[in-house]
Image 1 (tube, rainbow, N blue to C red):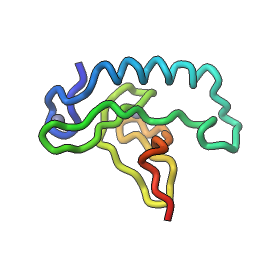
Image 2 (cartoon, rainbow, N blue to C red; image 1 turned 90 degrees about the horizontal axis):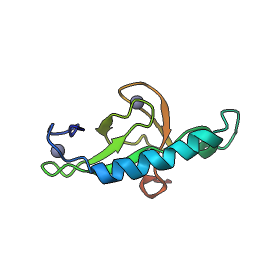
Image 3 (cartoon, rainbow, N blue to C red; image 1 turned 30 degrees about the vertical axis):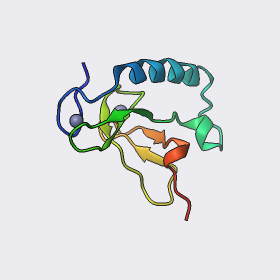
Length: 98
Ligand SMILES: [Zn+2]
Ligand SMILES: [Zn+2]
């Protein structure tokens, strides 16, 4: 159903996708687009597995529901979906503070 953004195979963990999409649905219900708090304004990107061939992390966008290659920008807690350009928060565990 989902193709790995690295190798095109079935590396995406579909169980994780389902859990994530359920969670993010609740987020959208209470989303506060005017909030100054990043995590109330933007949904957190989904972590839906690792590529079996490259070991790269796979993220899922809650807007277009497409997996993409995980990345982060230095000193930023948000990233932009490469497919639909929506703003997304990075999961807390992957954030780095310098
Ligand atoms: Zn893969
Ligand atoms: Zn997207």
